[in-house]
Image 1 (cartoon, rainbow over the protein chains, first blue to last red):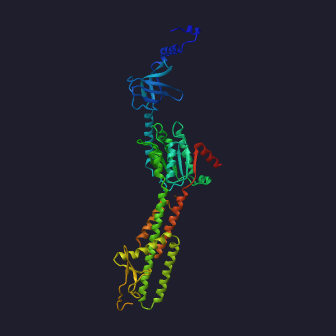
Image 2 (cartoon, each protein chain N blue to C red):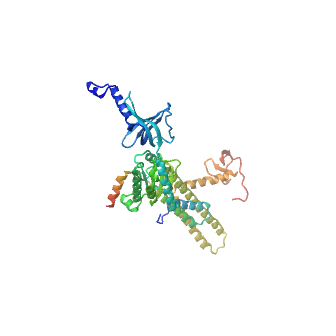
Length: 420
Length: 74
């Protein structure tokens, strides 16, 4: 190794230069056993037993290594963890890379502090009765949904896709906010303030759309720290201030967020929120059509019943004493024509379904009779026969049964005496 | 809901009652017609309510919609 005086005698071989740096660095106590803090990224544990990662913060970063068995690693440490390490700077001369050789690594308990604040907030909200409040009902048919979430997020495209499957073109307004990082809480709160404004009749009128009647606030899953905005008081208060129902739609599995506790409906993911609040238009239309059909059939049957009562009345009138006959007859005619008019006006005109129903009634009744063992006789030309009058020996006829028909021929006819 | 119009859910519940009543039968002419007309009216309203849910898709950044709302106030 040469001294610095010889540098001027000619170009220094690069290997020697890197070696010089290494010596300088390794002699400086600043780079030995230094405590450093930062966030873990590119965390990789290799089969060899060594662990490589980078330590970074907003201003810079550096690669680091934990040699196999050199220090215990807390299993909670993963991508994104805040950690404190004790490390020594090392320079790998062959490649000129510098890295931190870690002797100790500990996760920083950021969550511990946050959890405490969350617990206190939940306690406060409970005391205020906010957790037992009556929840606003979710509208059966939402006419204007406001979605407060990350613009361009996967969660948002999932929601759009699901909405359009269930109710193509359902009216919605997306308010794109930051859902992560230090500015997230404030943006979510402002986003919810916008939904309050859109929910007023006045603003809705000015914008020419129905007022917002349902709000979904949320984001896709992430680490507890990522989701923390939804555990903050400002966001909880903004949800509580909403005049229309709010759905908390943050992707997470086990831990309950404060937003879940105060919202009118808790969904486990943004997609879950859509499935729970957006009905299927096809299903709804089907139910209404079915109801329509039932209403018409039942009304028609009622009218037919009424008509039958009149017919019974009519036959009784025929044997009634002459006195009062005309009055009763007139009354009957009025009722009968009223029923007929009603049936025509309110039903037949409005509904093809009724025409079908009538047709099916006509078809059904003779069928029932045939099923009881009677049969119907027709001439070969199709005229229904109800008398032996006019029948000739050798004439072709058709016999109809419940399950088919038979061609037959008249052998001879016999008329019962005394019948007409 | 502050006005007297029933909500969609209320309307469907009432419809169900009307239809079941008619299906049970035994009503006079007046009652039948009254129920039919009420039912037909509710159905019409429910169907048109489904149509009102369709509309525009607005997608705006927070700042954009905030300034839009501010502009409307002036």
